[in-house]
Length: 564
Image (cartoon, rainbow, N blue to C red; front, side, top):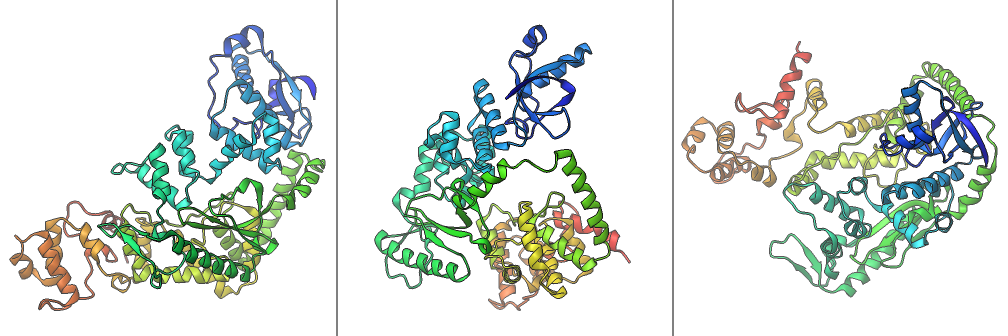
């Protein structure tokens, strides 16, 4: 490692610096000493590909403090620097973390991100532990944070979640994490913390029926339900596990038959450690790992392979000297980009396919997210899931997934900008017909339309949509409908003004009962099955001029755009 004195204008912070992405740091504690004595401890830098220019791996605060002083005095400054070998990303990351941890102890999330960076560069858990003088258990505990959903990780980094709670959450399935996080964000519910959270996650040893992979209809054991029928558990754990393990074996055989090279069922209670594996697609020999929790929950983790299959290739790659410097590679990329896209202008069918691949897999300049149909009401979620429209949409999603060789996708869009995945999708799309591509693009467009957005109302202006074809007001709707004036207005809509006037003093509950009688043709009422509340229609309409819902406001706002 060479020691050099380097001018400030030839230095820049490296993306590999442990604190590179954080906001501008606090400098007041080091500015006085640097003003008086200069920088005494050398920065860690490495060549950035441009002659005599370097990027800072460790020493960001000293660099920024020196720039502040240079601006104050107008005098050019030079800094002592230790120069690392060019191109060794793993060594640079190690140096950054060691330098920073020696000066200011990073939080656990910083350590997780830094250790993950090293892990991605090919370092194993025991190597990382040796580098920092930590136990392997400590490193594994940091890696356990990878099992947390992004929202929980961010809340923990912001100190909104305590350590005991985060430890418990690393043991939870993704479904349980999401359930807890909804309570955590809610103003109406209180999320359990610490020991109470662990008890909530483990369920006191009980196994809920929702964990079963098998049908409950032919289950011959006892099931206990609470007084409200909201939660049910298996009375006999041994009988449950006999059926559950048989169901797991059936799923394992299905996965092997579908082309997965290997399906490993982990011992009950053992967790899958993603940091010990590389992601690998099915067609390249990827495997499936089955995580079986003591709570009865089962997770099928697809597309991984033991790291040893790739480690040798990665090590060899790291020792090679790059043919191009970073600026030269940038020059190459820009010229290839300019040539490729001007040629693409003459190939519209290929452009359509490439667009579809970008929309599905995501890319740096385009990323589409499916609408998650978010709601805090379980009844609303169940109502939408059971509607004719949603059922038909889910069927089309499954068919599109088959066209693209996707394994039971929850969503078609929502990729993480992985270039390899985009290339795989594009290669598959190139084998499909124009009719298939049009079908895929149509579905992708439908999947990314946001609920409560003008796009829904724009569509209704150019395509006839009859809400009665796709849903019927159900228990969830009438439970949410509580305003007596609105109920009476709807009663006038469906049964006539005379009926509404005669029942104007009746309770909202009584009026809703009459509306339901009209919908179903009961109790002497004429059946009006195609009636739907004005808010749900296309375009959406209101029952008055005050307090119009968002759907009505959006419909009225865009109406002039489509007039005539």
